[in-house]
Length: 170
Image (cartoon, rainbow, N blue to C red):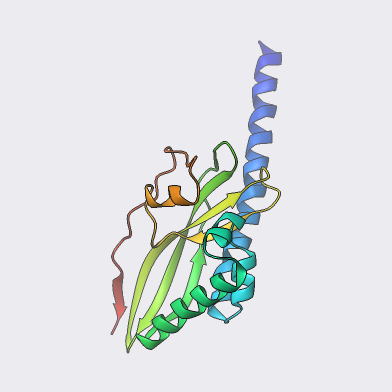
């Protein structure tokens, strides 16, 4: 019985270490992805997006234009992201061609003089078993719409519905 217990313990440590390595890499990547948009480095944002997203979005130049227009529209409407905090990702889920996991982010926004806190979700996706990770803000996606880009989306991974922002300061 002892060899089985030892084997299970070693397996647990391997999986835990494996998961921890992913977590750190994913959190750092999601932070870079989010910050690249905030500082106007849309070229970095596009580089950090899954190649399937970029391809179906019309290529790098088209995606640069899309992201720039989105960010300009938010600024024109008076939205300003003051801070983001990336939390630990959920466990990665496998598909036939990718690892996917959801990464929660807490955001503080300024709209006019009011400040709001909200939670959003970022998709971290790896086509090479965790060697490289790509990111996508899931604000505009559902489990159905994401299948346009990832037809083999694993139904175990449910994109949470957007949560309403709460005012924290007027």
